[in-house]
Picture 1 (cartoon, helix red, strand yellow):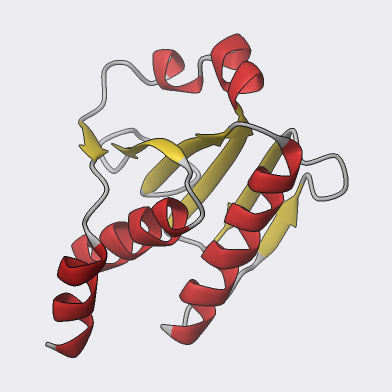
Picture 2: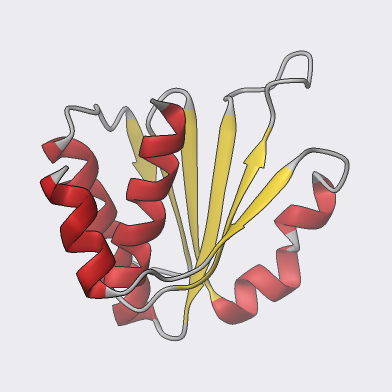
Length: 126
């Protein structure tokens, strides 16, 4: 189930032309606030907001609750908390500055590539 949710998030991000989608598996970290971080970036504040909106819509369609969200308004760094997954949507220069992945360099990570629209359609129909 979690693999499906992580892929759903990656697809929702790529649908709005987000970049560099990575998941960080925090389950082995004692006291971690969540099981996974998903990190991505957008090239401008409008795109960061569009990515966040699309992620929220797709997760809601799948029955996930958005518990907390911060960063809307300035759209430099939007954080969405879905309980076991926290999504970080950065403006590119903010991601480069904060280097969140480097803080968690010792955890397993997965990079997601964009799937073609045809592949996404086939997966949705299954």
